[in-house]
Image 1 (cartoon, rainbow, N blue to C red):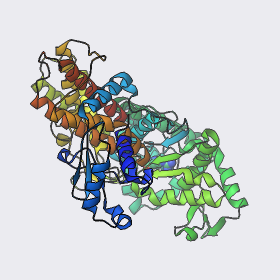
Image 2 (cartoon, helix red, strand yellow):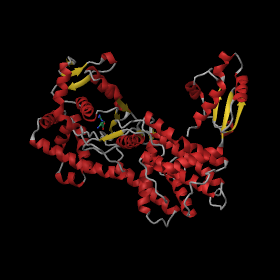
Image 3 (cartoon, rainbow, N blue to C red):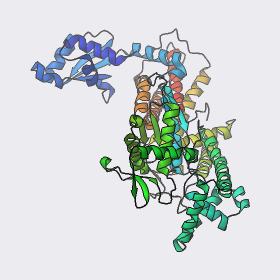
Image 4 (cartoon, protein in one colour):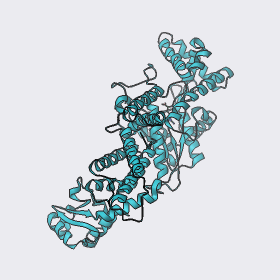
Length: 563
Ligand code: ARG
C-alpha cells in the first residue's frame, strides 16, 4: 500500500530514462491544499536536458501518463498534479488500520538493536525539577517510539547520587538538620539544608573545607558518611517514585553515579595508559584543544572524582553490558559541552563506538520568563504541578460531564496527560514558559483536546452499537473525510521520522492535526444515519480512534474512553 510508489511508477512510464526512479520519488511533493491534488511533480529539473519550458514538459507528461488508478492527472503550470482514486484509497487505508489495529505503524527498522536511554536522572536530596520532568517524558516517549520501529530501549535513571554536594549536605544536616524533619518530608528539608549551606558559606568559607573533607570520607567508605548518604538516597527515591507512578514511567535500571564508584580506577588507568592524562594546577585533565573543547576534568586536586569520570565509566559499562547500536542521553542543552567532551575523551581512548553516542538536548522551561534553579530555592515542585493539573482537569470534567462515573480516575489521566502532552508538543529544543491554566485547556493545541476527540469517537461507536464489517467496500466519499484518510495513511511515515529525529513533538503535532481534521469531518456530516455508507463511516471513526490512541500511547499519555 504505497500511493507515492504508484505515482512514481506512473511517472517513470512516461519519463522513460530521463530520470532514475529514486530521483523521481525524491522530487515528488505533497501539495499544500487538496485542490492541487494529492501529489505533485515539479518539471523544472527536466528543462535543461529536454530543452523545453517546464510548462510544456508538464503538458507532454500528462499526455503520456497512464491514468488508471487515478481520479485524474493534470498539468498545472510547471507541475503535474496527481489526484488519487479516492474510493480505492479509502477502502485500502481503512482496511489496513482496522486489521493491523494497535500494530499499525509498527516496523522493524531497529532490527532488535539495544538502545540505552539515559533519562530523568534527578539528583538525590533535591526535588525533581521541571527539567527532569522534560527528560523523563521525552525519554519515555523516545523509548516508545523506538520500540515501535523495532529497537530495544533500556531506560536508565542515572541518578545524581554521588559528588561533592553530598559533602555539603552531610555538613548541613549535622549542623542544622534533624532526623524527624527528614523523615517527615525528606526532599523539602534536605533542600532547605542545602540552600542554607549556600547562604552560609558566603560568610564562612571554612564550611566548604568541611564539606570537601566529608565527601572524601564518603569516597573512602567511612561508616557514618555512608550511612547518612544511603539514608538520604533511599528517602529521596521514595519521593521520586511517587512522581514516576503519577507519570506512568518505569525504568529498567537505577544505576546512578554511585554505581560507578568501583569502576572509576580502571577508567583513570586506561586514560593514563593511553598517555592522555595531564596535570594542570594539581588536577588531572585530558586536553581536548584538538576538538576545540575545554579540557575534560578527570580528577580534582584533592583526588576526588568528578561527574565526567563517572560518565566515562558509565558509557564504557553500557557499551560492555548492552552492546548498543546507539546510546542516548536525554539531558538539557546546558550540558552540551559536557557530552561533547565525553565523546571526545572516549574517542581519544580508542573507542570508535563513541560515534554511536548521542546527546539529545532539550530547551529550558521558564516561569514568568525566568530560569528556575535549585540553588536559590526557586523551584516548581513537580508533585504540586501534577496535583494542580489534576484539580483543574477535574473542575472541567465536572462542568462538562457531571455524571461521568469514574471522574477521579479520568481527571488524573487528563490532568497528567495534559502536562506530558504540553511538554512534548513543543520542539524539543525550544524553551517555553509554563502556564498550567493553558496546559489543561480542553480546546486549542492541548492533550485534553486530543483525548476529548478520541472520547468523542468512542462515544459515536458506543451509540452506533454495531460492529464494523470489513467485508464491505469501506468508501467514505466526503471532502472532509479525505483529509482524515490521508492523515491516517501518513502515520507510519510520521513514526519513522520521529524515531530518526528523536522528536516526540512530531507525533504530538500529528495527533493534533488528525484530531482537528476529524472534528471538522464530524461537524459537517451525520455519521449515524442509516444509509449504505454507515458502515464505512463507522470504520473511519474507529480507525481515527485507533490511531489517536496509538499516537497518545507513543507520547506516554492515556486515552480515556469517556470524559
Ligand atoms: N543528574 C544530572 C542533572 O540533574 C543529569 C544526569 C544526566 N546523565 C548523565 N549521564 N550525565 O543535571
